[in-house]
Amino acid sequence: MTFDPTFFVVLGAVLALVGGIVGSVLGIAKAASAGTATLAEDPGQFRNVIVLASLPMTQTFYGFIIMILIIPAVVDKVSATGGSGLIVLGIGLIAAFAEFFSAIYQGSVCASGISLLPKTKGQVFVPSMMLAVFVELLGVLGLVFTIIALAMLELM
Image 1 (tube, rainbow, N blue to C red):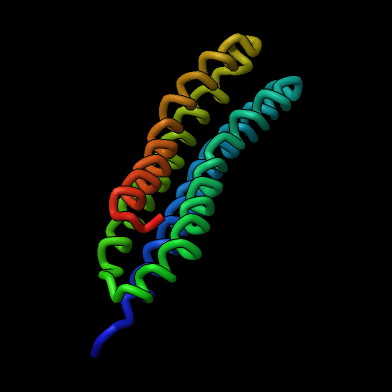
Image 2: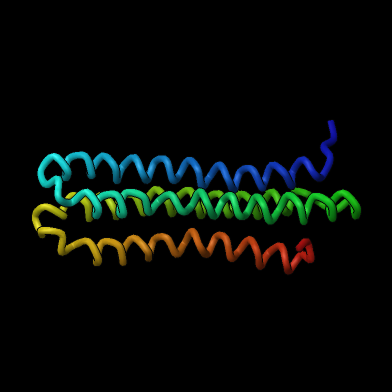
């Protein structure tokens, strides 16, 4: 059984999106669970909880951007040249893992910050956000890696 190279290209692009979506869901769920407990204790922290709980959502956007970069630009080139879609599948998998784990662990950092909001009267909001951004950077690097890898392979 043989596969068209475009199958692997599209699979890699879709997996990058799925990694971002699933990671975001798990990260947001963890942060939102902490947010529910925090809001029961201090409803005045609603704005801070919403901001921190929503941060892991960005990895879904990165996965979506990766999918948009890969499918239109790469499918045509791989189809025309008969190139290997397995390389693009590998790039998509690396991006998927970057987005997946970045979102999950960002949710953990945000959950910790959210749980401390009532005890610190909101003073931990900015430090929590800064620490969450450090984890987010790995998702951004997954996006950047994808762009650089595709450019180096002259697929963009």
